[in-house]
Length: 375
Ligand SMILES: NC(=O)c1ccc[n+]([C@@H]2O[C@H](COP(=O)([O-])OP(=O)(O)OC[C@H]3O[C@@H](n4cnc5c(N)ncnc54)[C@H](O)[C@@H]3O)[C@@H](O)[C@H]2O)c1
Ligand SMILES: [Zn+2]
Image 1 (tube, rainbow, N blue to C red):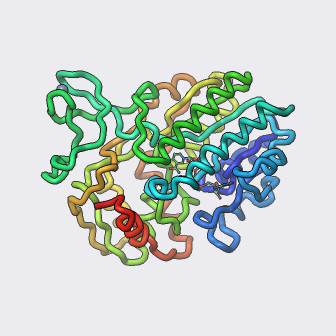
Image 2: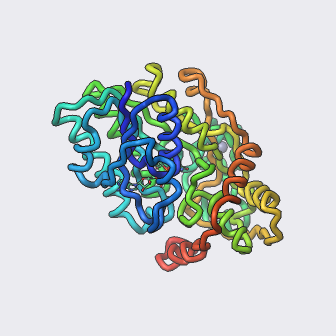
């Protein structure tokens, strides 16, 4: 395994992966359309990172010829190119399906119908396929709650409840066997993408691995994209002197995983045979509340902005989701090296070297409101 194609290799995760694989002596080709939402209109710092470390093909995964050109001579394909905004996916449905599903269909179409050299496929799935995480009811056992009820949220009762006895559920870590029930078009896209690739890999006899990444953060995450990456969005707000308005009671949580950990796990997936045919959660294995994220960032930037916990809510939001890492530990020997405090320190010192971006967050919230996707 020497030649590796990374689609979306100019992006946040892809560019770091490209750097690491280049260091390890692999020949990297990147297929990326340098989407404006991520890269802006001038040459982005992400793109500069991979220049000279990869053969760059500016192309689109929605174009079969671009795929054909990029796939020539490759031993492995790491498919990362995607549209990634959860909220945005709820009104740009056609584009999300096109890039995330059709973009993957072309890859599989080529592998199924032409001679090629691909011996491994890695696909970036997401924790978004699980929707709400895994819980337990003392009486009724494991539960995968559906969307929370407006009448509970109105009263400030944000924790999911048992559908049978209505008692508050206890949070558990989400393992790979957990119920898949995405709560966004993006999540549905990722589920379909993962299943298409795993199924076709199996029937074509090409070893295939899917990684369900949790919330990835770290240097390189777009600071101008208001649609994804809570640490980046909060950072840009704070550095513009704008207050943070936190939904619910601030105790909703996510699993934040540092980009270098994600890259390390992905490389294990490329190199280890034990990964073949498997899906893995990749996260930090720890739930961190949104309130803690906001407070930590405020402290790191030494800022005096105001953090308010508004009790506002969006019905489609999940309450919690954090990864059970037992499978990836056992099969691939992966354990994350960065806890949240260490990762956030690295992230913030990188942000401080970057130009302060325009804060487009309020505009993105307004878009959701205008479309009736947010009350
Ligand atoms: N960052 C996260 O928290 C996270 C979590 C779970 C899963 N993922 C998945 O990991 C992958 C990489 O995510 P990321 O955070 O690096 O995203 P990113 O947006 O930084 O990178 C994606 C790259 O794909 C490129 N791209 C977009 N549309 C394209 C198209 N039509 N043709 C070619 N290239 C295109 C973009 O220009 C960008 O360089 C995605 O598949 C995403 O769904 C990310
Ligand atoms: Zn119960």
